[in-house]
Length: 82
Image (cartoon, rainbow, N blue to C red; front, side, top):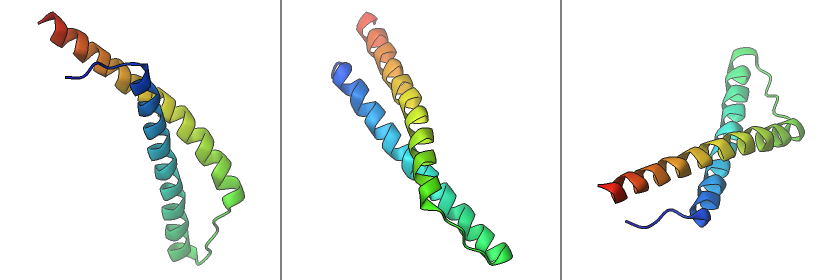
C-alpha cells in the first residue's frame, strides 16, 4: 500500500471540490426543472448559481477532502502498527 502524503491531500480536496460543485449545479438544474413542470416557469439564473456553487462546493470539498485524507492516514498508521 502506498503512503498517504501531502500531494494526496491536495488531490482529495481538488476532486471533492469538483464533485460537490457539479452536485450543487445538478441540484439547481433539477430544482428548476421541477418548478417548470409544477408552475410552468423555468428560472435558472447562472449569475446567481455560479458564485453559490463555488462557495458551497469549495467549503464542503475542503472539509470532505481533508476528512478523507485523515482517514487514510489513520488507516495507514493502523496497518503499520499491526
